[in-house]
Length: 344
Image (cartoon, rainbow, N blue to C red; front, side, top):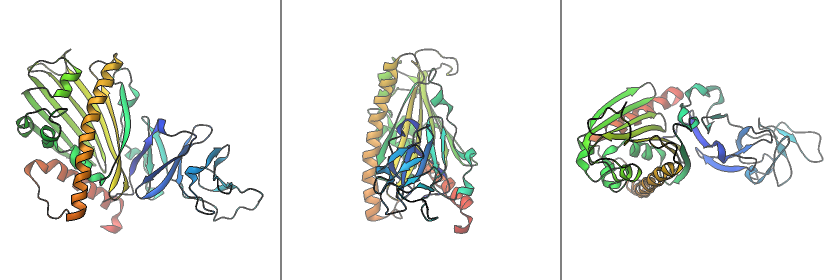
């Protein structure tokens, strides 16, 4: 299910320049670019004259020029210039999409423009707090339906199997018996997990010199349809995490999935270091560790998508540990019904 009437991350703000960027979003070809004065803009990636991709064009003073026959389109999508022609037909225009720059991200609305409420865009001020939360961000193309990655992110029980040598840790029991606090919100769910007196996973040890036993936490906020905000960490067993100093591990990850097609998506992610903030090498280390885990996830969900495409999803059963992802899918369904009541 792709909820068109929703905000999706189109690009990191620093990805979009005066060189046009082509990206398919919710099955729509989109061109992203900045005007010469720096405003980010999104149009359908096809000239209204002969259909050439505008992403092969050039940003000029009054818009983006199609490099096939020279038509120029402004930010609204209206054609503003046709070479050697004063009359501009009303049909000479392309679709434009609302695009909002916030927290170093560019959010796009593909659906009905009258429903594009900017207050629905998730807040993430940590991207702007480089002193306390230095971070790295990137985008990963993944060949699976975006909901499968939502499932994956909210399923902590896979960590000790798929990520046993990285973020998960080698003891499945740690995750199976974790204390869970799960609740629904108006637009998603929250899931808080606590693992007391547990061995630190390899990723934590590679970043911080921790003792043999720590108290761990994982806090997740899911915002429908496709954003997961995560805060994870650990302190020596028995220490109060609110006041404990070093050694401790603190990590924030921002995950959001943007549908490309029905079986592919863009996985936008950032990871922030909160335990050794003045040390760029510490942020580099935690980034490398997360990249390992993301590569493991990508390989698994892409293989999973192939089997689901081949055999269908109806044959699959849920486990007790699937409760968070089931509630997340319910939240996506409710959002779609709320935004598209005519399809309910």
